[in-house]
Length: 114
Image (spheres, helix red, strand yellow):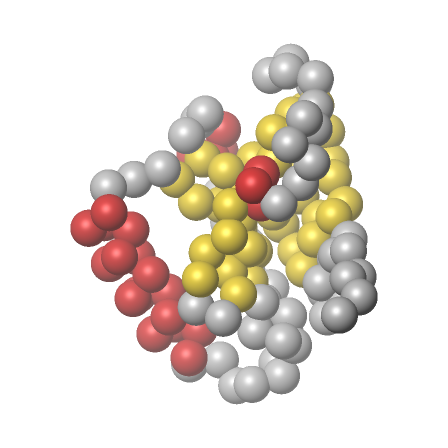
């Protein structure tokens, strides 16, 4: 979680009811963190190697599947987002060029003009 209350991690493709329950639980936990305070969470990532888990960004109460915000024909499959800083830069790991080449990634937000 960064100072802007953005959080990154791993999300699975699960049922709608289970997803809604997870969102409510996560929102309660996020609300307990003082505004502007950055924290780190250590996770056992061994369970996240399944193919139905993907990297996500949690922003303004909504999960964003990070594979949907990179280039459509990207060679990357983003599996886990590990950290986010106050600039919105995200680091994590995923696969590049298929499921055989595990790599680290760095995502930087694209600045758009209004």
